[in-house]
Image (cartoon, rainbow, N blue to C red; front, side, top):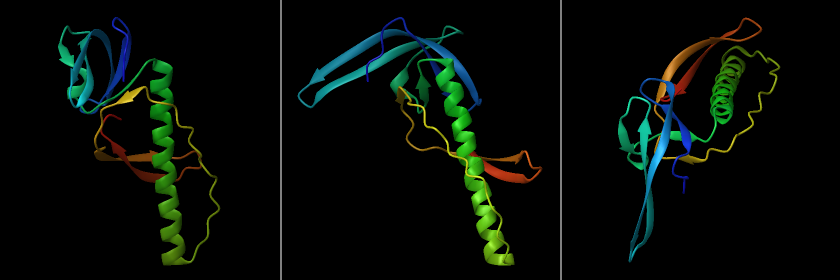
Length: 140
């Protein structure tokens, strides 16, 4: 992946559950017998400089893409939770509830260094008043 020097990217911080802007200050290209490796040094608004690829984070080129990504992830998790509840209710109690499908649109991530999402539990109340438990990955 190649990012332009001077461009601003938006990183989802998995620990603080926030979105952080960062500027690409430097692009380093390393060519070896095994191939080419590109890394990017970025600067956060507090002045901290780090290598982007040394962190397990998703990042985007615009806030619109960040917002779309986070909303779609939430929809996915809600849909899975509601689907699980419907299956369990049908299996255990013989009830059959019609569900409105929630079809997330995936927005392209310009890059991600995430290896594996860690989950956190969250309670959400749907429009119909139903309460569901969802598991949110770090960075949400």
